[in-house]
Length: 314
Length: 123
Ligand SMILES: Nc1ncnc2c1ncn2[C@@H]1O[C@H](COP(=O)(O)OP(=O)(O)OP(=O)(O)O)[C@@H](O)[C@H]1O
Ligand SMILES: [Mg+2]
Image (cartoon, rainbow over all chains, first blue to last red; front, side, top):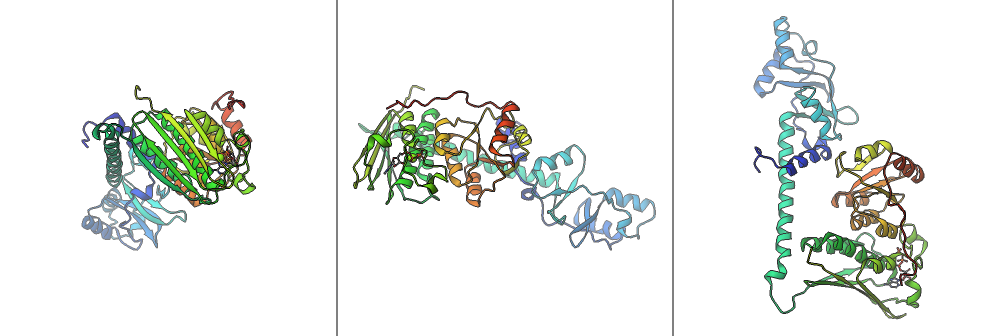
């Protein structure tokens, strides 16, 4: 990344980062602390040795002041070199909470002209320090990380989107298979999530991706909620169309006409408490898909077949 | 409405922050039924809900929703927080009830979807 000519996108990334990054993730934790018992001369020696131009004065991590090179010079001019540092330091210390966002610090450092800000926890204890230097370094590091993540995703997308050009046959198709467990709510939706990601990488039209995501998620949740052994989801991706099947082995459906009625649901109370069981799932699937077929027999299994046309003209 | 104004109007805390205060929120919606979110949720919509389970985040992902507001000062369980982080969804909490949270946002100028219809005879 060249810093001389940042693109608009990269500038937005900086803005985003300063509002989403917490101070504790950018602060330096190895703070050089001045003890209140030290003299002005001690502090001058310490600053020289550590190459710093200021430090918080704290006793057992409780901040009592902050001392800078300016304070030291003034104390020397006033002949107070061997007085305790507490007589020379600034007692009004501007601090920042460790979980506040970086934007807050950027404001104090940049506009109000502070060169360092001690970072405290909720008990007011010193936990770190931020300076313009630490801030810029860590923002650049994070920008680089998200830049790399972006590039990696672009590469995945590039590779995947060329699959139908790169692999030639009379009829190429990509088959994805996902196993869905019944009543496993901690994994419910993962298959749909992966299918959505796959279609994005294949550069399918976003409108279509959204419709597929809605349908396949409703179908996945039906497998989780209404079956007693789970089931599987099969996605067959071709150049011009997408076929999806959600298949299970029980308990089956007695009255197909009834379950297709919007608002009909057999979901128990505890499922309704989770926000499911409105009886709208199949209606939603029907609405967003180009073709839907539901086959079932009581005691046997259920099979839901969906087709989406992929419009490549867009 | 900007995300900043939305959090101010709701006196809300941000639980998981994945969008800056200048993020544009074009419209709002409220639902406690996931199928409603999937049927009426529009991309970019702020979703107000009384539910806190991880499925809310999953549903938002599928519907293309980036901002979820938990009403009535409900605390989100760690799984929900974690999933929101992973899926880059912003999670906000307000102490107002669903009714009041919606009312405040609407009168502050955040529009809804208008009249929506799902035909009963679509079979
Ligand atoms: N795979 C399945 N096996 C057995 N029964 C099913 C299956 N899928 C759906 N059903 C039956 O069809 C009914 C309607 O399903 P639909 O998805 O429309 O609504 P829901 O799942 O009850 O509620 P919602 O989807 O709104 O959360 C279900 O309540 C259930 O009785
Ligand atoms: Mg359903």
